[in-house]
Image 1 (cartoon, rainbow, N blue to C red):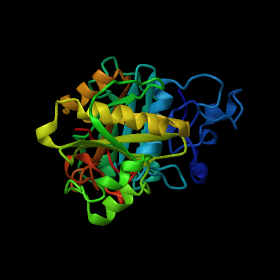
Image 2: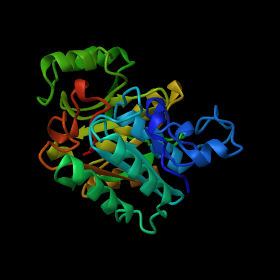
Image 3: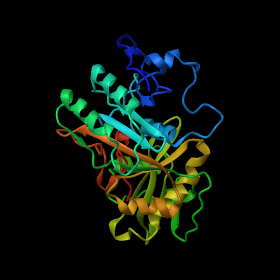
Image 4: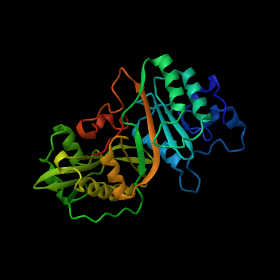
Length: 313
């Protein structure tokens, strides 16, 4: 385990510590890390090996939630990624530096969770620390499992699909399902919000998979299906097709959902997505949850990209 960061290093919080797995703390802020033999210019995931599940979760945190110059995330006050290999954390922008050091130290010393479906024991310690300076803190209901979409994902389907790279994309310009503003819908259809795939039934958009959050290394799938069409394979079909569109970018493709969203987890199972672990979010009880910026059914507003937890239906 590592030692807490030095106070005079707080301006160097640009990356995740190689040893501590904590986003918002550069490797140089840890005394033990500075003394180790690992070169300081090595960043997580740059070796010629596949990223670990924990590293992928760290990438996903930086994809879903925007970060400031210190590497602090905007949205929840704390996100802890829990994987079999250990824990990683994203620290919120409003957490004072002193408490941040205590949270970093607690996460760095914590043991991996034995049951990923249950919050890691260190989460309660972190909640108490945050509450001492931010007021009431609660576990966000959008906390839940995360998955990696595999490179070779094929799902045969007879669903009628319209893709953002196809000639038919203009046919859905007037098919706004009603949970997007007209301006947002135009931006989506024109491809200005990233790749998308829509399932069509009787000239009506019944399911959408789009790109509500993207970073240099990752892209998140955002899925919505009309309630009366759920459980019929539409979400599976659009997600698989979206992956073929997003794959050429070279980014890691993520799919995540809330722990209570069993139907979304069934979609992940049907697609054979690779479980990575869980993202546990702590947020101030007096503020909106990490779904802030999300329209009904988990579809995110463009302005909220990277700020919101992205539920799937």
